Image (cartoon, rainbow, N blue to C red; front, top):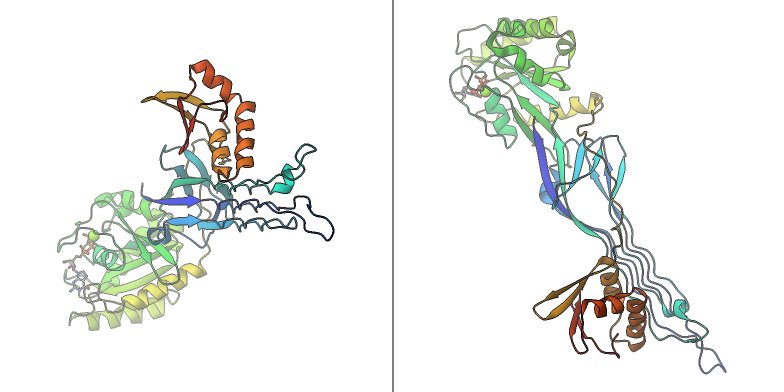
Length: 430
Ligand SMILES: Nc1nc2c(ncn2[C@@H]2O[C@H](COP(=O)(O)OP(=O)(O)OP(=O)(O)O)[C@@H](O)[C@H]2O)c(=O)[nH]1
Ligand SMILES: [Mg+2]
C-alpha cells in the first residue's frame, strides 16, 4: 500500500483582548465602564475537496494560522471575530495528532469538515465586571490564545493513471521523468518487479498519481510473468497510458504489441479493457521509430478512433508536456470514482481541550502549578493592572488552589510558579 504523509502546524486565532474604558458624558464626572469585549479568534477547519488528489500542496506550505480577534473598544464596542481558516485536503485524508499518533478523523466525503484548532475566546471588557460593589472596574481580560497542534496528514494514494505495456518499453523512464519517483531503469525486460507510484504536480495546484507497473507479456491475464498481480494494481485507476516501444529494438511489431496487451486486458477484466486509454509511442527520437509509428497510427485511426495517441521520447523529453496536458484534460473529463474509506480506527472529532483542574509539584525548591484552566487565567490576566491581579487572586481562591497549596505544605514566603509567572506565597498574593 502506498501512503503519502505530511506534517503541518495549525493554530486557531488568538482572542482579542477586552478593553478598559469609561463613559464620558457632560455633567457626569465619573461615567460607568463601557469597555467592550475582544472578538474570538478564528477556527482552523479542514475541508475535503474532491478536486485534490494528493498532499503535494502541503509540501510547500506547512503553517496554517487563523485570524486573531480584534480587541474591544470603548462605548461597549466589541472586537470583530477573526475569520475561520479553511484548509482544503483531498478526500481519503486521515488526520492524526503528530505528537501522539492518535487518529483524530478520517475525511472521506466531499466537502466534509472537521474542526482541528479552536480560536481563543475574546477577553471581556471592563463593562462586564461591574458589580454593585465595584461599579467602575478598572481591569479587563486579555484574549485567550488559539489552540495549536501539529497534525500528521496521511493519504492512501490511489493511482489516477496506470502505465501499461510490454517490458522494456520505457514505462519507468517515463514516470521518473514526470514525477519524483526513482525506479530502477535498465535495458532488459522485467527491470521493474514491484509497482512504483509517482505524484505528478502540474501548475495551479493540480496533480495526479501515476502507477508504473512491471511489464506485461502474453498470458499475463492467466498469471504469466505475475501479470495477474500487476494488473490488480491498476484496476482502480481512471486512465490507462499504454506505452509502446516505437523503435522496436526487440524486433517486435508495434501493432502486434498493441493487440496483445489489449487482449490481455480484455481477458483479465472487461472493465479494465473499457477504461479510457491514451496510446503513447516512446523512443521516438530513434531513427527507426518513424516508419513503425506511422503504421500504428494508421491502424489506430481505423480500428480504435476513440483512443488518442501521442509520440514521445522519455529520454529527450520530447512530447512530455503535451502528454501531461492530455492526461490532465482526460482526467478532468472522466468522473472521479468515489473514494473508499481508508481507516477503520475510531473516529473522533477534535474539540477544545478538556479543562482539567491543577497539579502541584515541588521542583528544585519551587512549587509548580500546572493545569489548563489556571494557566488560561494567568495568560488572560493583565498583570500591569492591580485590579485584574486582584480578580485573579479571587479566582485562585475559588478554584481551591490556595487551600491545595497549603495542604501540600507550602509555607509563607515559598515561591509558586504558574506558567511563566512566579509569586511569593504571602497573604497579600494569595
Ligand atoms: N532511446 C530511448 N531509450 C529509452 C527511452 N525511454 C526508455 N529508454 C530505454 O529503454 C530501456 C528500458 O527502460 P525502462 O524504463 O526500464 O522500461 P520499462 O518499461 O520500465 O521496463 P520493465 O520495467 O522491464 O517493464 C532503458 O535502457 C531506457 O534507458 C527513450 O525515449 N529513448
Ligand atoms: Mg520498469
